[in-house]
Length: 84
Image (cartoon, rainbow, N blue to C red; front, side, top):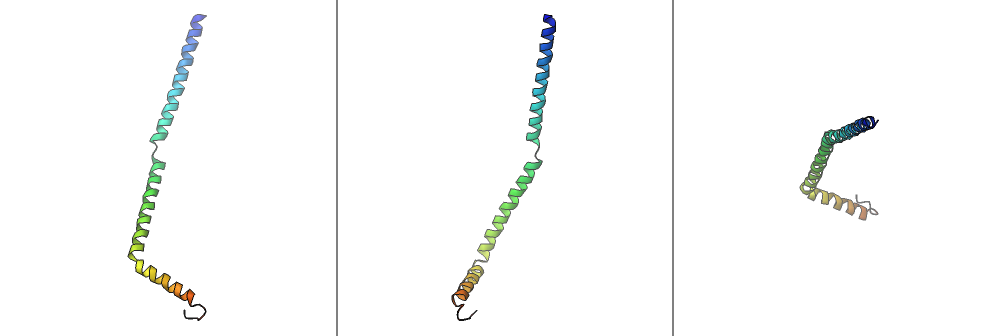
């Protein structure tokens, strides 16, 4: 009887160890899966490039942007005279 209990305990322990091993391998494979991470990295790269392009455009066309806002302000200031 004791032999049967010891054998059952060993089988249960092996089963538990196998389940833990499989769970750890599953978590490990999820951590190694870089498909989603790669997509996020590309998204961050595109966002950084977009910000750099916008900043470069603002510095390049600064005078034109300021002139356009000045013209719009002057037009709104003189809206009653119809000078636009």
